[in-house]
Length: 558
Image 1 (spheres, rainbow, N blue to C red):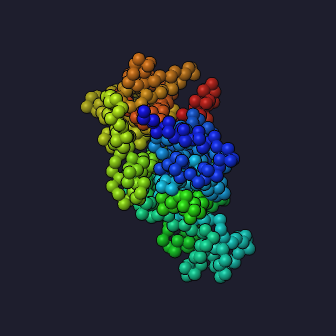
Image 2: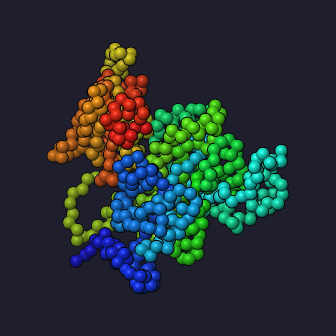
Image 3: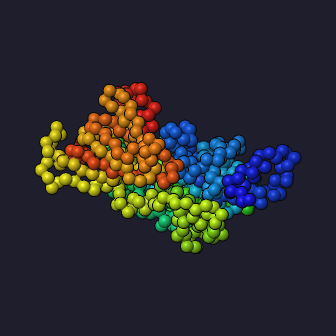
């Protein structure tokens, strides 16, 4: 009888958990053969609440999208370990800050339940971004990790008048600030962990693989971007790029500190690096990796850092640093997009490594042909002993986005207008003349699974095309909540057509762990759609208007 991979791994886990103190020595001697082989470790830093079902932090999309449904206790760290025994992908949440990150990575690397000797590590989380380099929502692959905490500091009120900052490298004897050092090489002894260079060939491969991944964009982001009038890169829609990460436990902000960050990164990388993102944890995570590498528990050359921009590291010229911080206290404009970008970009790397494990286990992905897709990999895993049956033709989400020429929608998801009845006379409406009808494709994905609450003036007929079921939440003017599921299976109560009349608040959502990873519909709008006829729901006003639906509005609003 052939045992499934899940059953075999479950048996191994049971054996490891059942061992008493007397058995621990035996585990140590046999850990490599008994431990679960991990292919990719996904490292997140925080989750806001629960791991699913509420407002998402860094971990939720990964847990759902990678089906990390086997969760194990991890008392030596901040958060339980969750893994997918079938794919070999494991996810951890380290907790915020350098200390928690370093200790979590070390604890995992020494855990006898797992064989991590060939694993790839992807640190993926949100960050501040330098508006000189990128816009919020963008995804940044790092080559250098620079520590912003290991330094000397004197109060700015006590520093010499010609200094730009009172913060300067450890053991630097000359009375110079970093920006004034004429010979940087003389002060770049980084024995204390001031700078780490990652495997740049691996980072280059990850960037090349993901540089064209479409990223979500929302109105609040566009409004904030427009204020950065002197920063062309900050005004661009989100994009994928390469740049370097400065890790510091202090949440700093402002134009002068952004200049310090650029000088600091340039100093420690001998002018080779460029500060783009600011976070807290990554130098601690990689320091732990270097020790695990020395102990032959992990391979530091398989370590990647992807940071996605939730906020800018400095305000626009029209605001002071403190005013901007106060505004950010109400929520980052790029938060939702940065979480979605992290999964959209990072999961493509994870999926490619797993799908090509026959090659990537022993060689770096840039050394081999990594053209196998996840669907081809899943097909090769089937055995002749398994009964064959007709299966749906599943497209990869990004293939569908490309094939239909879709772009990010302001309410979430993707769309393209396919028809506008501009060949007929326009009709009068309360908002002015409109064409009789328009039509669009609309797509939700596991990476962008929510169409946030919005209201249209026109009536909209919806047509389900393909993919996972889509749940619609409709709030009528009198506060009545109506829930409708669009899908391809009427026997399960799903509908393939749905009318939503003008004046109704509408939100939509697909499961992030569905069979397809997307849901595609068409919409016919009459009178024809204009952006001026659509109102995006703001969380607080909606909660005041419909207090009986606070939890739903919290979940499905910007």
